[in-house]
Image 1 (cartoon, one colour):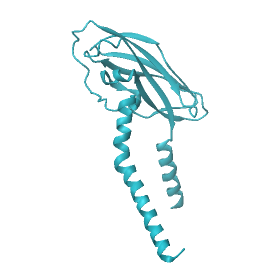
Image 2 (image 1 turned 180 degrees about the vertical axis):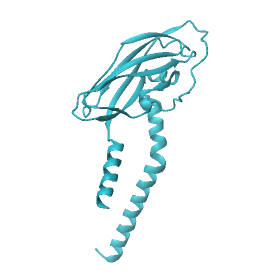
Image 3 (image 1 turned 120 degrees about the horizontal axis):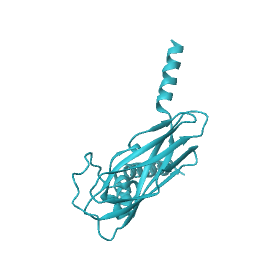
Image 4 (image 1 turned 180 degrees about the horizontal axis):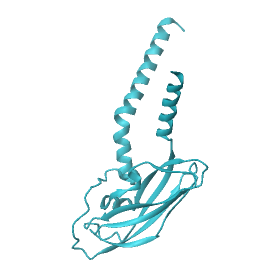
Length: 189
């Protein structure tokens, strides 16, 4: 291969790298957002209101089922305290989940939620939830975790049941990492 051929190859590879970077930064997020909206994953497109609704004028109810799983990396028990409940549309409701850490050390986790069927997700509004923040349980600790929600009154008539599902994933212990870094800096001084 000649020097000119090497130069053209390097230029082409550089253009491919720039194109891949541009795709990942500019094209991939909107494509992923559309994918999530279509499938209902991560509740894309669902806005969370901070205020619960006023008095409901609806007499219609919907059955809400509760589901809970943990990722295999997390040695926790995690379950809903009630398998389902009938909820009046527009009325504030709450459900309790229970989590217990079976590891010999403190472990932090974060819950990811999903509502099914996907078309029901936009009508299911969580006003307060353990899934909004990182949860840490000490070794052997168990705790009830509430979720406060309502189902909007304009839920399509065809939806009579929905499932609120959570999966807990282990996350790194940021405070412990920061404390360890601060401790090693103090030791080196």
